[in-house]
Image (cartoon, rainbow, N blue to C red; front, side, top):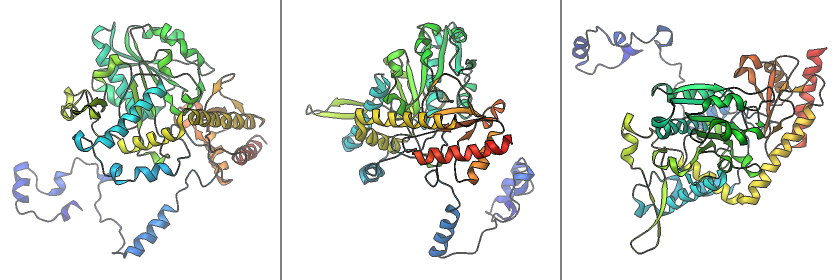
Length: 456
């Protein structure tokens, strides 16, 4: 296919200068098996009606989370977004806006961004928040590099970061991508059999730049022990906590028990899972990290007439294009999606958020009780509190159980063997505020049928 590129006049001269004889030679370093040597098998030209018909047919093959009982989460959640949110977000003032570098013409957008920061700050119990990141994984990675910038020079373990062993692989991969090139070393902190963090093992982190943990963790475990983690790691080391934002409606904000930076997935507020994106991540910190935090910050000030005014503050556009000298390479972010989150949070208010969290907690407990009534199914982490998710051990392969339940019309959860090979018999079941008794019965019956076949 590359040889079919039209002659551009001086093509032969350029190839000769490069010491090549053909365009194919130019791409010779691309493996043969991934080259496209034949034209794409595209249909002939279509009318608009034919294109739409084909698009509907192809999209109709997708199974969305609302088409059947769904217990799939593992990082992104099924949620209910009020119709008012997309209606407001698609107003031209928001939808067509870009980064408001000219505050005199962007006061509405800037105020909305400032309100988002304020709500995130109050939610996590820290004084400063930015206008969002790409997702929870980039938030976590940026928090780690931020902590190293702040603590690195005075640390007794310079450029050393300790991370919970239960951080999911996809997030760990992003963290490694961020840290490997700048010389940051990562050590893992182990967990006990009940899923709680081993605080004695965490003592190794004293004098390091940062510790990153999650509450609840990737198995859904709410670990009350980590409220004392500051005593284990000391006052110097930065404590970074990843959160389920909805859980903060019922549990203590990390800023209240020693967190220096709080990150998380903002997606439960404002937007559905959307096939993995676009979504947004939250990032909040204490004032010690303010000038070295990533992303953009909106500040509240007054104008020349003494009226309240808003503007981007503390970092300029140029900061984000200074390559290796920049605080962060995140320049654009998911501002429109973050504003959808702000709209959703504003509609909920404190009482609404508490009710949302209680609904999720209640559905989790109801689902867990029902599933544990099945002979042969047991809780992976015994005697623990959970939120949204819980892991169960099965008398066989979790992937086979999911295939069986899918035939019964149920999305039964996530096979943890995809993350950790040793957990191939463990199923992660996720719940949300939309989980109904009928959903729980369908899941329980489908899983019980599979267990009976597996053990007969």
